[in-house]
Image 1: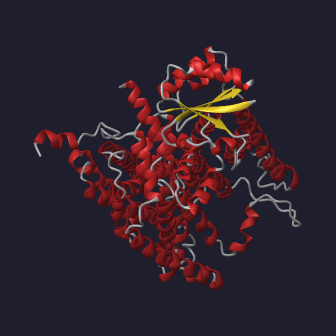
Image 2: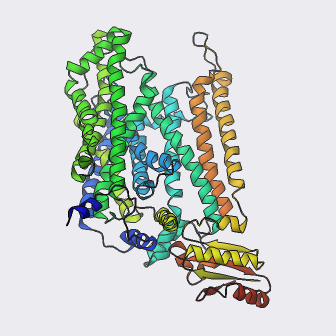
Image 3: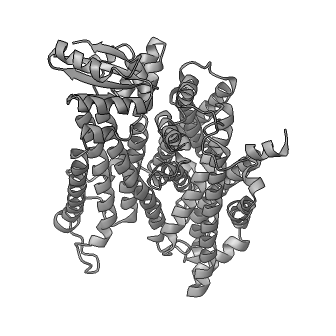
Length: 456
Length: 173
């Protein structure tokens, strides 16, 4: 291969490689689901994921039998892994919504090929996120008290509490994410219905496609609805992370009580979200032979977004250190110093390294295009973001105002089992979608190619 | 009255044919395509009018209803005097009001979309037309309603005469 050809291969401007046709994409993407035999890597991945999911079920059943005492939570650290996991999962979910909704509104061409992977990821991230606050309730069977339903006790939920805002926000976000994902899937389900050769596929996709005809009327209403949904999901994703930030900022706990928390959590969410999308896109474009439609342009854009989010978050990390000293409040300073040198110092510095320092490598084009390295950096960010949530939750609570109740948090094996198990729920769900749902939006690719064809 | 479908293999040829059919006086036309084709709605003279209005109405209802729900709960049914703070603490209600308005728009929008498109409708006569399965892949179809079958069919054939090799299929009753 000559140097010129190598350069061609590393071109980061094309959103579609030359030679890709609308019918080619349609046939390739739908055959992955309809025709291709289930590959070995799928069975291995699915088996491991299902094992983790089993662990999750065991951890939750045991929790339901014995109560939250099986976890390491106690006074003063009453918010342990469950809340850190919740914030982590809901943050990662944002990646799908940001790519799919925000970059739909900006009319970014690179969005089309990655939107389905990103949205599918969101659906199972919010599922994992939604479970966490419920199992964290000591008496989880009363969780419906959050709904303002007419009850014989004549009680109302406290609408003024950020924790209740959070309940409403996540309710809207979960429903919105699923609806957005499914509506965007309908035309592709119709394609699967029409290409299916086996009877069960025809029946399954026929029912799921709801009788989509692709008539001009259907497309007209579809376009209107999809634009509205995107315009709603973009502010919803910002609002949910802002409200998650307010859950913390609304408490007087040192280290939490800061006005920067809403944007701080939005930036963190974006960082972990883009990282997960990268971790899925890099192996999938190879495993499903999608490099014609998911090009180096996509990898490059996602890496740049990861770097941008990392810089924004680093700014918040700096403010988090600066503000306590600026205010001069003793306990706030105690928490910062405890982070630097205390029991949580290894976690704190690991978070700084993984979320702020290592992503600086992405300034270099060679790193952005080096897929294995990029995968490792993204994985580091995902781990780093979990650590960040853990440090925020545990470190602040273990240095509260009353010095008599300074005590660190010790996670138990059930804490770790819940964390690992929730990853099992996510991965099992995602592997199933890989097998049954087209991982690239076929109709959007056809639209993109049609537009490109017309403009030359 | 009967319906036929003319099958084209490119969006541009389909648009051209659609223009000719409009000029020939056909008005009851419908296009079936694997992706939205720019220019079809203009030629057919149709727009999505109802859906945006329904969604805006749902948003207003969701916002007003969501705020009232909180107001009634916190200020009327279960007032709590906490240090004399106002019961109608609207800034604290604003977040949930926004979320509930967005939720109402999402849900009503999807239901209205289904109603306007008459979905779910798993069977429709057009699905029985051979070649319709390509309308979700790579073919662009024009559905034409023929009021007086023989006369209109002749007009149709004349209007589409220049598109050689175009397949015309009858839609079963």
